[in-house]
Length: 412
Image (cartoon, rainbow, N blue to C red; front, side, top):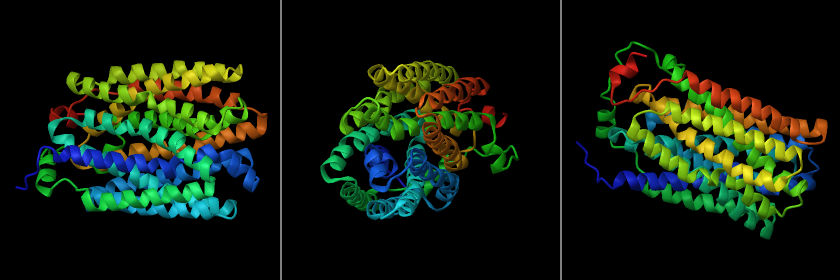
């Protein structure tokens, strides 16, 4: 049997973390310059929103396939291909002479982003699953949303302001090349012996792989991620624009406060991952997270409607506290509810649905609302309703289950 050092899983977690941080440059790193891009190429609000939506659409379509393929050929290969696609998309976007090429660059970036979301998460689960520590592993990985958003929306925004969006995007592509070299040299898949051991929890239910994807906890997680990713997409794409356009804030200040939405979730993601691993129960914490998301999204909407943008900025991290309490728990519950061989497929399915519906629909519809009504309020009202349904009502259908008790999981 192949032996690995106990520290190896932490090294792989760290490398997966680095890759996912880098992914935020092609995903949302361009959004602080959205007004500049729109002015340069005379884009409408709906066209600007579609730039973000096409990234999420392509990423969402590829995610389920990436999970299944990664389970078969190795997650490292999925990550490397994702980095290559992200690099190509970044340079196409930076050099685009018109809106069509901008869209092409965003679409190619979406392919990379999709692969880079499913790959690192699955890598983390594969290395930690045998010790029943998927909650803490996913909790750590989900902090990349906070750190990655600060990196992309604030630190990278400084680069964009200093060099312009085209040269800044090129610099982002060079950074991705460095990460590609590091991943190629040092990242490792779980050794086959350990992977075989992880698969010993045999699926004796006779159920097909497709039926497992439509099991209760997986669908609850998918609904949760639609709501979460929709909020994330709107905050990342439109909140900097709202704060710059409506409140007169600087690009870097707007990017920083938009990133606070996810930065606030760094602590809760880890803490509640640990707590749920210890308790063996996740449902009640997911419900609590959904309630917090709904209440604070309502407060955010009221603040935007009243023009109180300081309070809106305060509400953003409060929404993030709820989101990042629930996200790792919802995904952990989904992966623990299916056979071990389905971990990559479930990750891809849940994240893919979130990307396609939440990541695509929300920012595009927000742009349409802006074009139609002249402001963003009605779009935020719709988001509050959707959050109540997807993140609060759906989790009532979930069922706590631990993979340490496979008979319970297979009896579902």
